Image 1: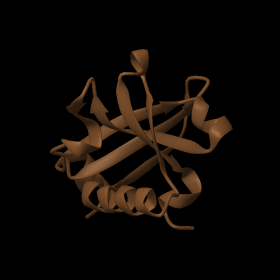
Image 2: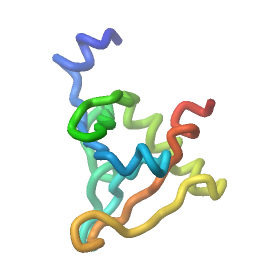
Image 3: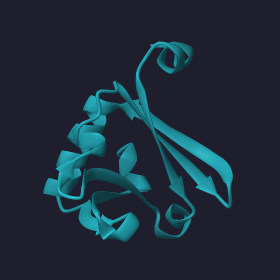
Image 4: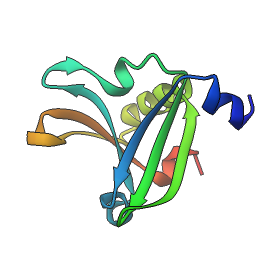
Amino acid sequence: YSLAKILTVGKVEVKTERDKWKKTGNIAIELMNEGNLSGLTVTKAEWWAQVLTYKGNIESVILMPVKKLKKLVKRLVSEGKAKITMGGDNNSSELVLISLKDIHGV
């Protein structure tokens, strides 16, 4: 895959992580909303893009295959390295918090 092909032909789910990640070092990925499967759990996209913004400016973008991200989330949760919590509007979303350090296994 080339980046151009991913962005023009592939299906990409794009989520924006605003400001808080800078302080916590985590990104939040939605799994459920109001008791219904959502986000990573139901996406039909092949690729997942997490846009990291700070004070309205894009600082970076994490782009990875959805299959790889699902495996990563499952592994990190089972190892106790990722935390499942409630958040979002009215705390109605079940989210998994993943450390940016664990995203690429570095």
